[in-house]
Length: 66
Image (tube, rainbow, N blue to C red; front, top):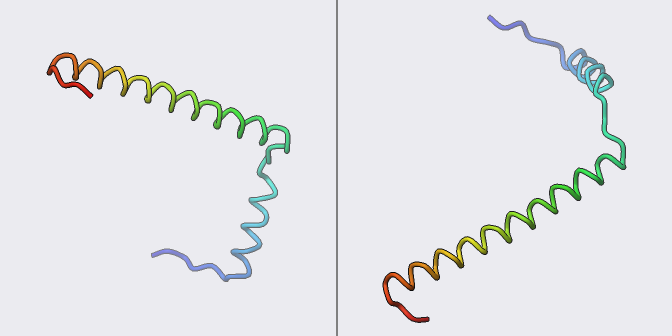
């Protein structure tokens, strides 16, 4: 059976654990954000190009004109 914890004790434990966390600096956060955005743009361009290429190939195979 699980041992229940007093809410006050629980909050103290949570605060204690969050103080142990190594938080990223503002600069690290900005660099990470920019990297995520850049890779999202690169991925979207790649998938758009792949989709266009596959659509072109299928149109050529089936003889469908746009």
